[in-house]
Image (tube, rainbow, N blue to C red; front, side, top):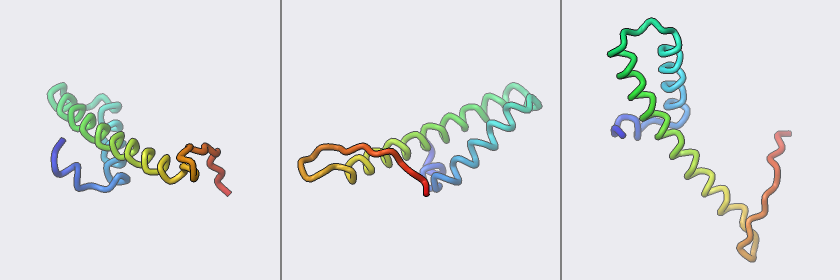
Length: 78
């Protein structure tokens, strides 16, 4: 993964990924350009998934009770 991607915030990376998907879905790119966009999109996707995995692990740690058991509760958006 490039250092350029690793310096971006999650939200910025997701926006870049969404833009790449839109470009690929348009079908207007020449094959060579589409392949390059796809490769770039995979890097953004991997980066975003890594951030989500790390965040999930942090949240799990925060949800452990005094005995070390993870207490799962549904997230409620009030």
